[in-house]
Image (tube, rainbow, N blue to C red; front, side, top):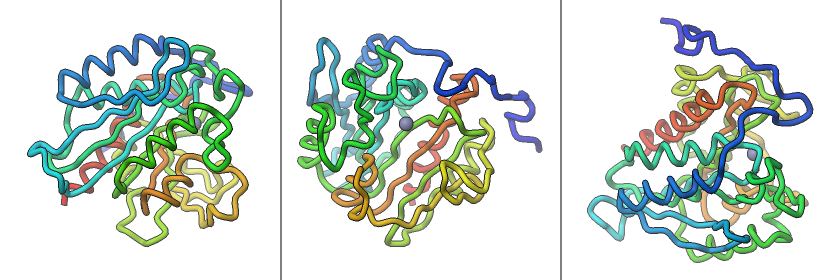
Length: 270
Ligand SMILES: [Zn+2]
């Protein structure tokens, strides 16, 4: 059977030249909806930084039995790049759909760069790319985020939701240095039903295969750290960065991210 995106003939919009020029979101309204939905489904919310009237907050969902010993602890974050609107919208949809594994504890950070969304810029209000700031902590947002992270338990899996305005389809970066059961191909197979996959042999200058990049690297040797490097060094041994292609319609990208997160969660229900 043909994949859904082939049936729907989802095609690149050709809008993005030199940056993201697609739809934007009202981040205040999206964060308000996220808080309302989270509250109605029993999540707790912790504010860890404020920039003007905009809040950086972490949502926490216990296991259904309220167990102190969950089968897994899963961390999901997004909204670190202000020109990637599908991430916060995917967070909202995941909370509204409320399809979480019963025995998993979920930590969800729906927007790490609210100022960037107001400005529709990758960086924060000072132009800092927050996803390069986890080694030197020059921004207030990431300093506060790391202080929050330091108070959390270890995570079995971390998922960071992004978009790439240059890509030809969805792809995944997987960091898995201890050789746990790989996730990348499973996520790509699930997402292929709703969104094209980037099958390029090289993506972002890195060797890729079937929409999955597995960089072999040692964060300790790198001068700048994205969020995943900090997580790998301090909190997890398996991390997937999900990249939706931002030259496709926003609804397709949101679906791609939601589908990938659900596929990752399902593979942990074992
Ligand atoms: Zn990004």
